[in-house]
Length: 263
Image 1 (cartoon, rainbow, N blue to C red):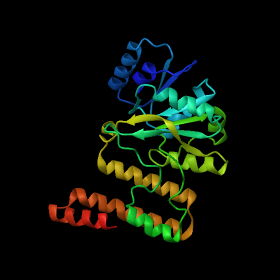
Image 2 (cartoon, one colour):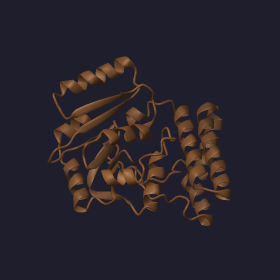
Image 3 (cartoon, rainbow, N blue to C red):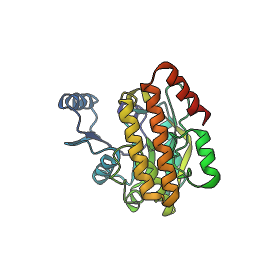
């Protein structure tokens, strides 16, 4: 990520702030050495003694940042050629009054879907639920692995909700922004590559658990009554089915996969 920012810089002054979420001392030392080897004086790194999650780290960096505009980036993303300049210039042309999201692709060029908080649910389930609750799947946000937002808007929205650890904090942020009249728009110019091979190293069971915990918190904050009960139940069932595909025998896994696809 840092290499691409230095290789394809935007015009004007900028700084790069990095938050290390309690990495192992050896990993942090390696990171520190690599950053120093870039020879850049615009990089600052902050180290947390405890892994507090994505949103909390971004809030900490926002307090330290000196600029009037923030670009929020995942550590497993990078820009190619002039896409960073095009993204930033489009943001300024639009007046910097909204949240602008970069078009996100993986390493083979496939586009990451528009953010829908319940994206782990299969399309058939979402279609069924949407018949009765059409607005449930419309937080209207794009993945926060690359956002441009003004300093004013970031603090006007009160930053990320730090009760989220991982997954769901971007949907919650975008929903609160929408209530304040700040939309999350998709860039027509910028493009960033999201290297999933790094994030997918997390244990799949832990990945599903974090997703479910994030969904549960989001529903507790933003859904009420029967909607919350219905979505919580469906999310739990889907997570259990995903786990079953990993732990069952071959025939059982095939049946579960068929069931999930059918729904």
